[in-house]
Length: 325
Image (cartoon, rainbow, N blue to C red; front, side, top):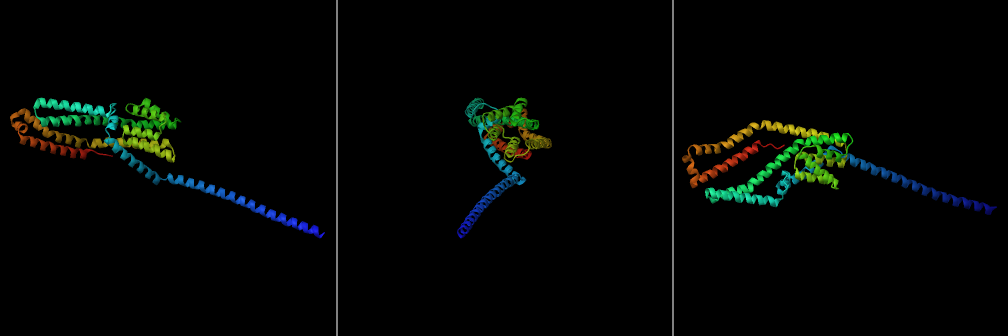
């Protein structure tokens, strides 16, 4: 009987120890599972807090300023690049053809001036101006005119994208519509953008290539809005609608500045053309009176000094009436 009692007590003791260890293991598993849930919740909370911090106006402002600085550096490089300038003007020729045309034009003008005046210095000056100044002026004129046409219709293109997104179309289809329905050069640039995206180029890289061909502030704003929307999310139609309103306000401001500065521009043209006009009139009416200015060395020096000071005055007046905003 005593042996049976001792066996029962031993069995109870061993069973109690086993249950105790089993209970500790279960509690440890429960503890580990609770810790995993808490850590997962903490990580999710951190991610949510990070997203909320990324959507704050201060962070967006910093991102916009950073992107603007990068775009400004890129625009300076593009402005100094002759190949990019030819693309902006819509010319298909390369830089080598441009220099060939410039050299032929400069040599032709040099030969004509030497045949007419027999003055080598005047011929060199005219050839230099015709070979380096005139072609670059023509390219800049064509580029500025093309960029102006692009800017005038760019806000309408943004409105097309906004209406397409609200009606359920993807952005790529909206870009195709702009390439078909918009006037040139806006349609051609957006067709190039659609082709680049279609072959696998990212929208940011495609817009960067487009910006090299059209370095405008409006296109820069458009690329910034798309970049920020991809990073932070949000309503793209609302953001582009706000951008369209900003672009139209800029256009209105540009027209107001043009109207207010028209009087100063007319005055600068009159003041700049008055001295050469007087010289031409005196030369036509009394040629002998102005003949020493063109025949004697002192007259040449006086003409050079007058041209220098006239150029300085025109440059100052241009800076006074040229508003950048």
